[in-house]
Every structure is written in structure tokens, then in C-alpha cells.
Image 1 (cartoon, rainbow, N blue to C red):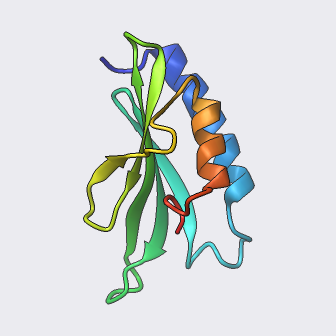
Image 2 (image 1 turned 120 degrees about the vertical axis):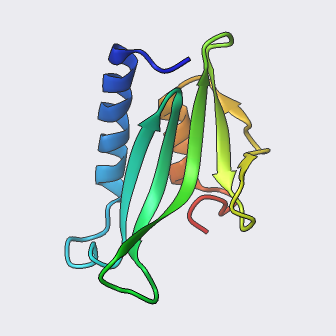
Length: 115
């Protein structure tokens, strides 16, 4: 089940504020930037970089995802492995809020999200 309208607006506000703090300086953003998308009940964070063989084209590289499970009221935490599949973030597979998810990503204690 997708996030409700209120939940989506709140998620957009919280994630946008988080990414604003993490964004690289303006002169670097053409080479590296960050973005997010909300799809159904998931929030996905990704890097935006120029395509290696066509620098005029941008490509996205997913780094972290949180999926809200309404039945439990928890967010499941995932990271993108080298096999390009989402895997549960085993040190902390679920958290109680979107803010806690973003704190995990920001800390990146095991270098899973931003390497």
C-alpha cells in the first residue's frame, strides 16, 4: 500500500532537508549530486553522475532504500550491493522512523551506502 498524501509530503520534506545537508558544493554538482524518489511505500536515495561513456547524459546509481510496512509501523532498510540488487541492511534491518533511516545512511558505519 502506498504512502498517503500527508505521509508523502512529510517524507519529501524530511528527505529534501537531509539531501540539502549532504549535497556537494555547487561547483561539483555537475559531476556528483544526490536525489531521491518516493515510489509507493518506499523512499529511494541515489547518486546522480555523468555517464562514463557519454558525459552529457546523467545516470542514477541507487544507494539506499527504506520501505514502510504499515502493519508493523517500521521502515525496512536496504542497500544496493554490487550485484545491483537490494539487500537488507543487516546491522539494522528496520527502524522506527524515516529520520532514523536517514541517520543510518548519514553515519554509513559499514560503508554500504556511499562506499
